[in-house]
Amino acid sequence: MDELIITVGITGSRITREQTAAIPITPAEIAASGIEAWRAGASVLHVHVRDPLTQLGTQDVELFRQVVDRLRAETDAIVCLTTSGIPGRNFSTEERIAPLGLRPDMASFDAGSVNTPAGVFLNEPDFLEALAAEARLRGVKLELECFDTGMVATCLRYLEQGVLDHPPHFQFVLGTAYGMPATAAALLHLTGMLPTDATWSVIGIGRAQLPMTTLATIIGGHARVGLEDNLYYRKGEPAESNAQLVERTVRIAGELGRPVATPAEARRILSLS
Image (cartoon, rainbow, N blue to C red; front, side, top):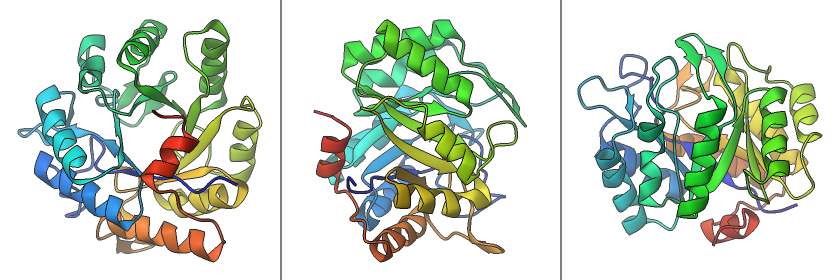
């Protein structure tokens, strides 16, 4: 197996301080939390930023710049910027793609539309094709986020058509209210759909984070943890930080005999320059 790539979803777009005091909101807090997670063993930092007034997700490039500049200055982590905005709020294509102008290592590519408790998370073909073209222009590798098998099928079609580039990296999102369940059977079905040159990682939402990332570690995938996806360390015990969740994954990987990837090793595995 390749070394285990640990990604951390630092803040997301909707978790509030009322839900957990640990969630980073300002650019300084988001960058600091990412640096702590990198020190703990994360090699990929998945970045959202928050509107200072609403504290909800925004695609403001200047806020992204503040976070990215500090991460680049203080870490060698792979920086992955979101293009999602907020589910239920329809940012324009231009707003969603704008952070690619910062030339991150990676960016998210949510490969279809899905219902959420906040409304429809809309990702129409025109948007996806524009995002793919901009990523190619900027030299940004796309993280192909898939909530169900139809999204995997969309990515496979785009790979065949040349809209997306090989080798692809998939990020499976399991356990959302209206997506695929967070079960071993679902994960194995998804991995069975992939081309032979693909790499993949898994997100388990909420209580599914630990079992899904552990299963991925065992069977050769990669793992994403973090407060964006899960607020608890264990039942009834809120997580203290993103770093705490990363540290647990590092310990589990060690017990399972799987080395954790450094950022340099993750770049090799993901075919990043």
